[in-house]
Length: 328
Image 1 (tube, rainbow, N blue to C red):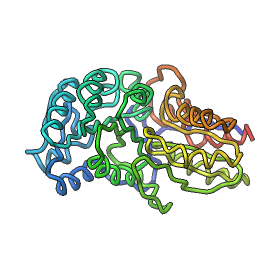
Image 2: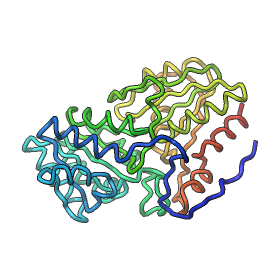
Image 3: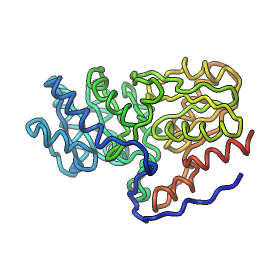
Image 4: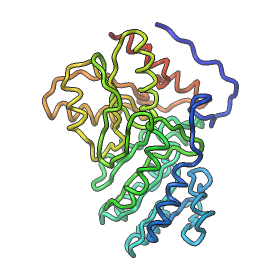
């Protein structure tokens, strides 16, 4: 089966990856943070001159005395957040994922993770969620952060994940890294009797022929592809793994042990992310399962409109459907 790239009505490099007509919620992270802050006076917000672009402006407007604008200085952002956590506050510090992972890694590692402080790093534009090229596309952020001790990594699918993750991250000890979906965020998981539980994977859909292990926005695509493949008499199970570290190996491996063709789906390079996390768990358990990786390539990506880029790099629903049918 062959597909062609979708015809674009806009060349905007920050066009949404949400499908036309899909249900959305505006700024779910920002509103969830305000609700959590209303319930917990220890919660504060910080940003490195990107509050509007990480939905942190919702907290800034609602509770200006609990928001701190640190300017374009990510090291200072994390250092200040660490100091606040030392005094008993619960900071949520937002910037773009590329700046958190590449520019301020050492501050996060030594000021926050090593003393195991409750600082929650909120990273905007994770993976291929912007068309502005390698300077803004954090395609390797999970690979960078997975090796950091004490750090929890969460890759939410939609507004449901984000709204439910915020209070759990605030309540959990130690630091976290949240891959933020901002602006108008799709609502998907409410149709699957789903609740977010930190550290847990969930089987959203059973299936007998193929199993998708997915995280982030790729769970939305996995569910869409599963519905399309059903028309070809291909029965697909979808397992959503919003917490990348610590990883719920038991739930994932229980699905893989059933002997179906398996794929991981992630909005991240195939190096160091979900694919290698699952592969390591499979090898350690001795399952001998072959897994295909639906992920971004190990290269710097092009700039352009998101629908074009998602199709080019294999993240679109069309691409997933075509690949599975070609390999069955």
